[in-house]
Length: 377
Figure 1: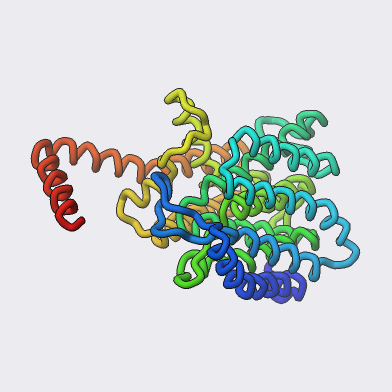
Figure 2 (figure 1 turned 60 degrees about the vertical axis):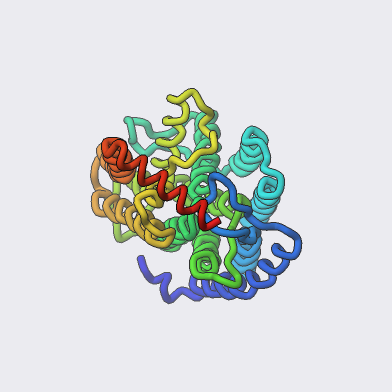
């Protein structure tokens, strides 16, 4: 299964994409600064100063260039399908970064991209026994495919709130799915996956540790990552096969889902919470998992490492339990992930209750801190 390590196509794609990103980001940062294409501080951001956007441009350039050069010629027709859609989605993301598009408009664009992809016959055709369902009706197959593409795409978009998080989850997810696709002889898709791994690895360096050339991917980047990950996941579900080393994986659709389980669960939890409050599921606030990690005092890097590790741990667990009955495995992964993501939230809530319980001393401390800050100013 791990012969991809010595495969010139997958490794060549990863290395080429990494090099292109490393070379492309410095001039992109200079261009973004010169033209005011930066993420400014506001009430919802967690960064200091104005940070250049357009990291998504480097990710797109590197991923598509490496995929184009490395993809075997007999599979090049796949790129003709996905390339225009990816570019369109990227441009929509750039526009959103610049003018903050209404969510309804973004969803319409995303819906158009998902419909185009499914119209080319790219769709989920079976539930493989989950809930006792196998082959899906054609109309529902199209509907569910579009739903999955939009869902995963937006999950990554919402995930991009702290340094390295969206790219970190993207790296691990693409690596696992890419390995799976390589082992099932899906040349184009494995090359696409490892091209993404390479570009995100280089971006991660600049995003997390960059000083002079620190950069954000923006919506253009996070939407692109989510879209590609959804393509890789759906392809595995579409072909309905798995590596020969693991021939009894009844729960393989759940294994695929586990590669992005934290983004999925956190998005569902946040959306449900907002709806309960009478708000839009897309209402801007700070109740995502990474926000609570920051409230607990973790740095961006520490929070990212923890969340990425937890997501990867659930993927490993799903692999280990892959021969379970699909519905049982789904419940273990879904509710296990939900329970884990709720831990930081309860910790923050308990801390807030303790502070409220402190009463007047707490208020006095806050007042003194404000007065002290006023003197400094």
